Length: 169
Image 1: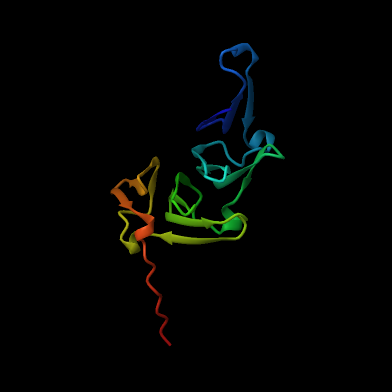
Image 2: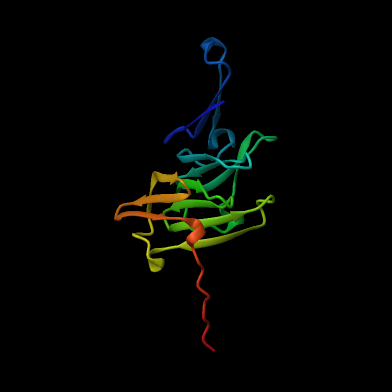
């Protein structure tokens, strides 16, 4: 399968042997056939567990459901902010990192993707901005890079230490 993300037609899957172009099949995933919630796919990502994710402009995050041959919206059930997921990377622990229009999101996903933890990083945490440019991420030797209009952020997830939150009484 070859998957193509478009800005007007949703996703297109090309199946078959490219040596025989006349035998290739094309499947469209869009709101027209209820296989995808919006028409603009910003990024595609296959994680280490074989799950196929798509980041959307105006639709957030979706996960491919093979049995139904459609993409299921995950923004609401994962409680993700914003409606643009423009880039996705995975760290060594299997967590997904997503550049969005409302910060950098770390989504820790175990075997059951419904039970996951979310951490949103913003400019208040020292990021260059809260808006990340679609398609501007990279994973190099466990160092993640995410680009925005005011620069880029680079970090190693294993070095991230969560500071305890003090709540005044």
